[in-house]
Image (cartoon, rainbow, N blue to C red; front, top):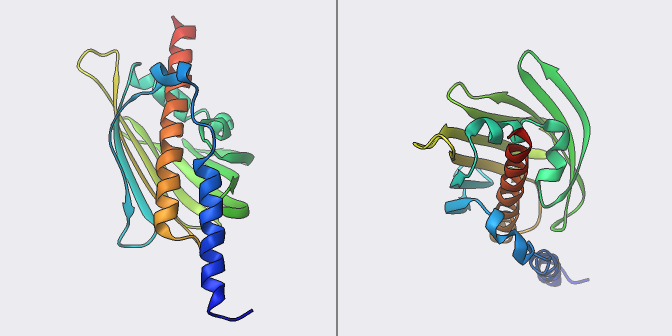
Length: 198
């Protein structure tokens, strides 16, 4: 194969995989009411490498309920719209190390992500990369009670970088869609948990 044709084939392969992600079914119409109030979701290139996503959300339950969903580590694979399996979990003095394997349509095979999570003093959760196939991974959930005490105002930040031939703009579009699904699932679980605790 001529070298000039290789980048074109890689780009076409990337576009094909991206089309498969975009074509995936979204949430059913009945799930629309379970979407949290989402403001200003942005996914941009990070100067240090990879992508940075930020968002502000309002969940219709108190912060303690949202945090209990986010710290239910054994159920983490259920909170995301990509295939993921938990290979191991270890608690260490208030910190939790999780060993995850992630499959993604844009990146063939599994990618290992070993990360450590700990609570934030003001309320929330921070998760940082320990090892695995990612170059960078840093996720922060800051959770505060709304003025009515019945809702949660949340600030979300994610920095992620993984070795791949897929262009950043394509990963950014997929990440935006996947984060919207993640926020919806977290909201659904939090609402279900709040109903059980009434």
